[in-house]
Image (cartoon, rainbow over all chains, first blue to last red; front, side):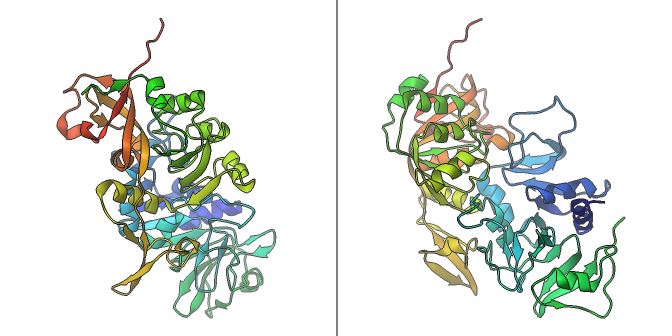
Length: 217
Length: 220
């Protein structure tokens, strides 16, 4: 299993029956693939739909039914569409149960940076700042390091997306929960040791006596 | 009052240098003929307010390609390398606004409000030079309303007097912008007789639409 599949499978276990969920572009989009078929989960796309689905079949594209990247999608029976003010009302108003976002850095307090690299890459925040400020649970799905450099750091060198700490960080090495006392190591990826996670993490970790393995199938 | 107008005539009424809101999300819900006509007539020095600049060759991306835009107020330019190139080269000014804040500022502009208080962006770069307020222990940013001289709106259906209905995710910023501009120009995929869109299905009432773009006669 490659690292992205592992992360997506672990994040999928966080989604519960009845949840309204927004998945970010890239790795987070993969999560939808691993949600159990019998779970009643509504996916929101911030361009204005609740109940999006993958396009069921090539040749059924509708120009007016797209995801936030502009690509064609399908929709569940019971889907609803609306304007951008309502879409972000759902996000900011606390109606969204979970958002899954990619990350560039997360700091010691669990605060996320994921919207720009000054002078180099300035895509804009899109909906990310609203999602991190407003969703009930914010899950960061990202690789633990980039080119060998830790992404979970003491202080973010990149601009923060929100001052609100995220709820959970899922990486290819571990599951980490930001708590009032610090970053708590909750689970290890299969075959990964506590020492390996420590070495790949710049921020301080709280390490319990026993750290279970990720329950991945 | 007759609202119907040819696309060339409509765009001819818009001077250079205006503030222009354009509906759409990655080109979906962006009026294609109005955008093409702006390019054809070379209307320039525009300040565009829109969710994104789509991609090169698509929707608002065509205005960027043609270098008609002086400034863009938007939430995302990551999908358009040409916007990023012009920004880094100092040819275009880009003001980035969180997407939900952009929607609400446009709504505030159209609904006559003095601004929006949002938690989004508090404590980040977005807070720079903005007033903050503590309300029940939480910090909010005061974001000011956005208005424009013109708005380009794209609907699935318009009736002869300009009532509009949008389709699925092509709705996005369109109904908000139709409230927030001095002159509203609407283009529709289909124009139907009055009454075909039932009152409950009208999403933008005709009173907001100044010009309804007529269809081009098609050959064959």
